[in-house]
Length: 270
Image (cartoon, rainbow, N blue to C red):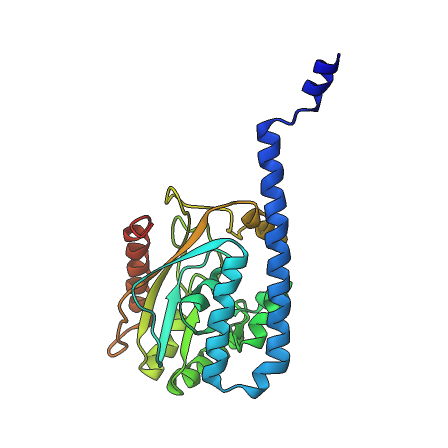
């Protein structure tokens, strides 16, 4: 009977492994929430006393540390634009995309207004100076394009997700060509950027960080925490000059380049 009792008390290796993953996920969640709290304090108390260059450096360092807290590796192919004017165009997969791109180099994001309502991320996006657009409002879109043009003429590096929403990263959605008008008006180059989330060991796509369809932010967040060995691969193409460009044709060219970067660098850097 004693032997039978001991056998009953044994925990299967599979159950123990699952428990270990959840415990590790809880630890990562705690670290991430503490780090986000530090971000709020930094924006509220420290940013008003810092120069723009110092703010940008703080944002880049904070973003890299957030990826570390979440257990996500960073692989960068190519070189992001460091000086403006420049407009980065990237595909959109996850709530992590903004922090991932900030980890590689500071840029000011143009995002859908819905992000302002996201828990934690919305307030951080506002705090770092993001621009927001109501995708369903033509008048608001024109306002934001005008604001983008002004910021580009002032020498900013902007970033936008021209698909307008997230996907699973396996293909690209149609681009909103009107966003390219800001680069044309400001005579600013556009740099294509590919984002991918992959398993760090196999190099195969990881869908854990995806935030699509009826998914909730917290469900995607928890799924990401529970999935070990994720890396984000960011691939930068060569900047494309604005002179003589038509916005619709240019959007097709940039979309094709992002797709080529996505296929070329899927697994080559891991």
